Image 1 (cartoon, one colour):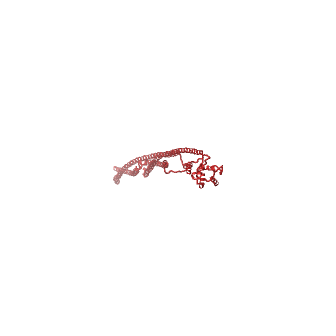
Image 2 (tube, helix red, strand yellow):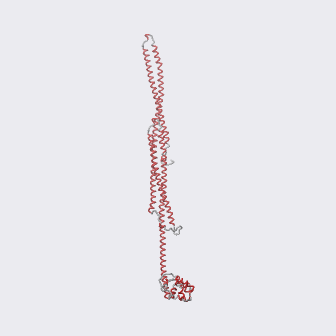
Image 3 (cartoon, helix red, strand yellow):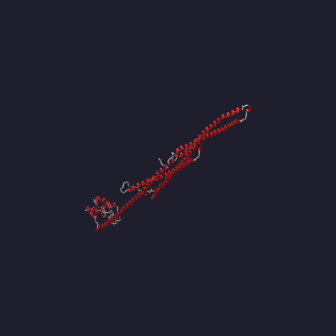
Length: 503
């Protein structure tokens, strides 16, 4: 009987939930009674299976004469439940008798307790079922919302990756174009420098021609057309050099601007690359991925420095700046090409003008030299003839001495005729006229001799003048034809003047 009650009561009520129902006839004093029975077990040897919720109330009714009535079961002190004075008043009972004493309930109490437990069970189960259903719904909703939120975040990151890829591709395309433009303007600058370097040779040639022509002599040291064209050539070359230097300075400045824009593009591309890697790694993360962890408070940290609009505008401004610099660079390269072509054409036009003037001047000098040579030849011939004439005159004068001596000797001999024989006869008159005619003839011949000698002297002076002038013309021809035109053959080509190497 003892085991039966213990098993029945324990299996029926020991595991029941403790719900405060407010019923006064079954106070929840499980813990109190457990302590009481433990302390009372040695004298009466009561089994632990009799720790029942309603047995203490029966005990209270049996001991109501010694316990204050005002004490209710929930407020009783367990330490005074089995005091020695109370125990001493209860007569010693056997185990079966004590069990029978504590089990005295009415059927009403029994049914009421069962019904109350049923209602409590139903209410608890209903509340638990509602709670489980609500929890399941909340778990399902939160799971779905979490998955949806994570998918939206992944989609947003994916869209961001697409935007980064788009701008990165635009930046890379612009970087390629800017790299090509930098190479093009660098090549253009090198051509300008080559063209400027090539102008040094023509300038030296023109200056050397002017210097050589200073060595002309006499009347040939004239400010002729060649001199004017050479001075114009020097001025043209210097103007071309100024234009080329100005273009080189502009090309250097533009190259710096292009490289600055390229640096900004490269920096932006590097930032986009790093951001792409980070966002791509974030996009690939999932709930079972490794490397995830808790970072408490990170959602409250805002270290952003831009908005999507300002972010896109920043990259767009970089691309627009690069495009603007590329356009300026392209325009500058076009101007550089035009300047090189213009300077090359101007220099070659002036070079041809100088050569034409040189050719004309050389032709004039050669004509003058040939004329002088012809005149010199005739002068030399005339000098020979004049010398022969002088020789004839001198011989003629010499030949007049003998007739004059004969005539004078006759006159002198006839002066020694005796007396009246000294007659002014016809022979006397004729001898006198003969002597006079001889003197006159000798005077005429001597005058002609002096004139011939004077003419010979003039011919000699003319010969000297012509020979000097001929040497001057030869010197001028040597300077213009050999030295100047010889050095002008090394004039660079139009392609080299335009900055193309190896032409």
